[in-house]
Length: 349
Ligand code: SAM
Ligand code: FES
Image 1 (cartoon, rainbow, N blue to C red):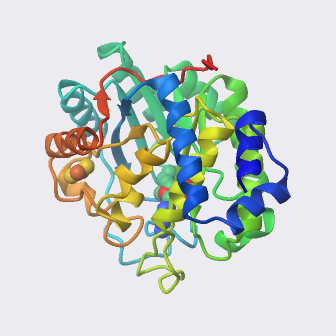
Image 2 (image 1 turned 30 degrees about the vertical axis):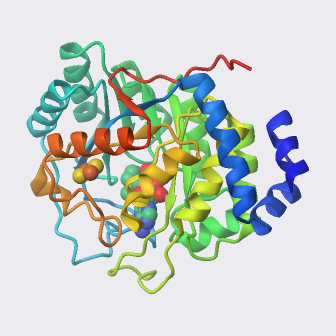
């Protein structure tokens, strides 16, 4: 095991079988060793800083029907909402005054958010706050659409690949959704010039070490600027309601491996991680993550953007969420910084 970890750190890559071995044979010693090395490399590049991104959940209306997701169109118990451009710009104003310099606009695939509407919102933010980065997380769109939003000023795009295994993808999504299209979108985003984030859920139904090994191999090749991984958490009104949730242990283990595969990657300690354990986000940072994403959505919207059961931060005001996270990071020796937090691609080793 140790020789495999040495090899990973040295070469930044392993074979599929080796990744699988690393996952299937993990124990506490391997996890500690990976985390120690991941934290050391992260520290060389980013010091003890943690970047914050202000997450604005702009709509829970979605035309898709991902089987795991609480805002899937078949969930008729979901209380739907969308923010209008004015409400979004109010969230940005508040976030700016709280020190945010990156805003993440995330939502279901809501047709109200046409290219024209989104481009106006992006231009509004960039004109008012040219020192800020705008990240979009609006799902699958055509290449032209991505290009228009990029030309309007969007800097980054988060689109989790969800799983790098086609058969697994087909078990998590309805027939009309396609693995190839998801991958095509990521390719288009990269070619257009976005800083691109991929990612996957840990412990999703039907996932084994074999699928996770493929995720790691994909990340090794794609070298995403950001990589969002968080535990799968069931939602009571989806077909996966009775499935087991992912664990902090495996999520943190994979965070450490991903840091070693691609040291500069921006890795969030996700809200889902904080949901399944009170100190989940701290554990993520201690495993090698370097980003947290406090919620800036209006409080009235937060409970409605319920992707999974018991999501945290749904009752807090934005300012509370920010100071909570700053305190949490401080308690483990990290400092939240308020710059755009771009990827630092120059490896210092
Ligand atoms: N519609 C956009 C998209 O598909 O990229 C952005 C919103 S989508 C809800 C954001 C992410 O939430 C998904 O990529 C998925 O990985 C995650 N997610 C959805 N349901 C989840 C669940 N039950 N547990 C954990 N994460 C979940
Ligand atoms: Fe939202 Fe702690 S981060 S309340």
